[in-house]
Length: 167
Image (cartoon, rainbow, N blue to C red; front, side, top):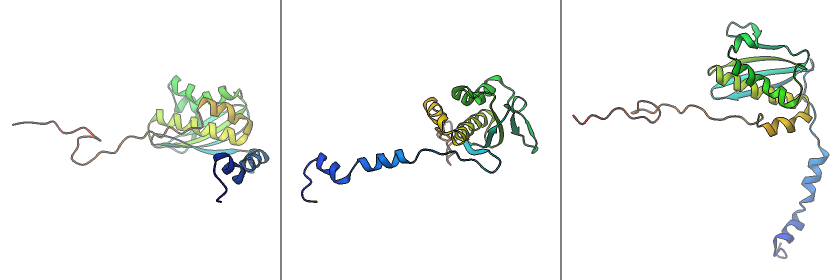
């Protein structure tokens, strides 16, 4: 240990080439269940989505609050939300090649759409690891961690004070 006097000596002692070789030796493998599906959990705000992706004709089903699966265009009626859900497929150039089943809970429709998008992206890269680069570059694998701040006691909302009255 006493003979290390520079950064180059430290790099030589640690052997920085060994971890790089280990990373190249273990490429990503597909993670699928016995039915050929890939599963992932997507989150945004307070919404959580459980998403299953499998090769198919492009069917897109969302489980509603009654426990039945409906088409995504019925559950997410606004065109903007439907566009959000199609983005991962468009970026990966696999539109119409995968069937999606999703269950959402919590939050509002916008948060749920973002959670399903996040779950689809994660499930796609688990099913086909070569799609990871495109999805990661588009930022779809990163969870949007912004959540509404909790209300504090003595305050009207999270930070807003009650109206001040001098008299």
